[in-house]
Image 1 (cartoon, rainbow, N blue to C red):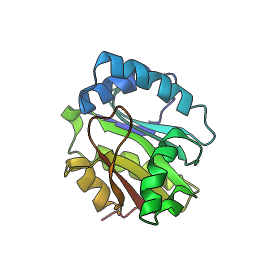
Image 2: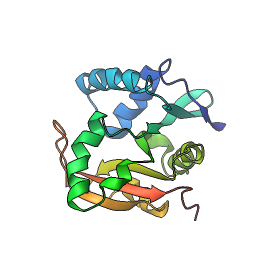
Image 3: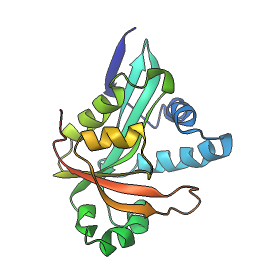
Image 4: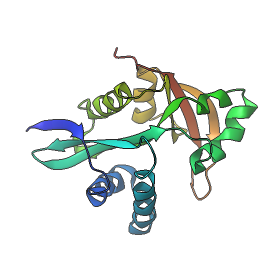
Length: 176
């Protein structure tokens, strides 16, 4: 099997990417439809970029992100939680990992690690931030191994059934 990581025109491949996310994250068709519009909007933001992981030409994982902007919806939701812990400065000069998903059949092969380190290696910002479901999970373990630390926990997003943690790491990410 030939696994390749490279630039992804996410706007052109949004349906393939969301099919991976739906399987990896357990999304239904209604959630996918909502996220499709969000992804397409995000890809119009300055500095937004994406990488894909393909296996024999089929998309099996992707990551996308952009320089953080305090006026974006995500920042407005997490800012009060970060401010309460004096961590709101992380919203400035940060590259936000908006989504990172690997199809379950391809997890535990280093694809998630390669996707996130490759996209952040190209960031001009000195640090990276992201949010993840606030539970012990393989994703959170990966982020911790890369140097991400909790900046706020039990962050509630409208319509999200579970609380999230906001995590941040200096760039470049740890490789060890």
